[in-house]
Length: 462
Image 1 (cartoon, helix red, strand yellow):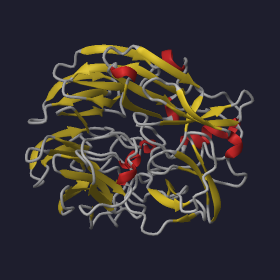
Image 2: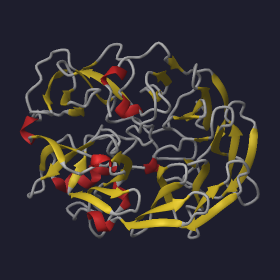
Image 3: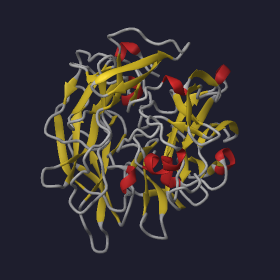
Image 4: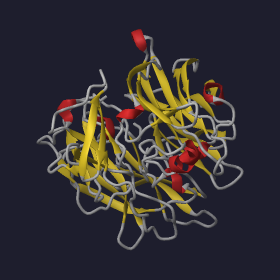
């Protein structure tokens, strides 16, 4: 879960000196199909909720955490096929870091047998809240587990997983049986699920020396372990953020887990923590490639579908833009730093990710073909960027420092204005689940559309 997933600042868009980079990255905003750019007939807009988390789709529903007018949180669940609101329940956060954004519910199972699991403000004795699994269609409670502090539940294969006691020294990661809520296995420390399939999950263990670790979902047996500093250098600081995705290796040689560690600057003028991209063979955790000292730029796809980065020059300034093949780590396109406008700009990408655009608010911008660096002359070019670089802090009762998941808007690059009737955001932003794409717009409304098939990761993960 990359920390820059919710309050975007143009960290890789403004040519500031690297001395100020760390502070910007801490607050920065975290494969396209061109035919998916327009809203299809099966689209819907959900009502009655101000969504602030990433929507989660599966089991025939989509679930999201919303903010009520009284400052409390709620879990809202919609029918994925038609957008009808099925049910809602109060929600809360206990022990989650503000830099991680508002936690979404976890959706597991299959249509007719699905569960939506969320943290509810039900206190029992010394326990601060309760993890509750409910029938995805009806909201009927299936099981409950008291929690002290947690980052929130996530899907890991068929199971429900979470880190708990996150505010204490005895923190642990636990995999729960979806039918009963009973623990299947535990491991000490705090971890996050970065990849999952029917039999295994890859955990990112968030420690002083972070590691990636593949685990058998049924038994918890460790299949392989990889120290992250082996890829990007010793001294990784998790305050900068991170992102992961799974890509196909070249030549059909299996899958590659692609990772990104962002830099962090503890004090002004200090050195940056190690950062960059790397790829591991998913089968055994062996390192396939690494690209140190490259910054991920925002907005951009999940690392599984496209790596867009920016170089850092030897003198500490921002250099050229690169597109990198996630499977091999090789640079496939380069655009010189001199192509960026001199005035303040926002980076943008069209639905097919074939061009790099620079949006200047209310003024003419520019865009370039990634294939050959030629300037785009099409006056009707539309590209996607953040709707806002300075969203207001969410007024959640008892919690500070949380911001909504950043929404994307379409811009006419030639004018710098938001496009009228933009349709659905691109696949590289929304991702998809069995062809369904669900997203939050800048006003907090939930939208869904089925305009394809299969599943793909989006900007914020699976």
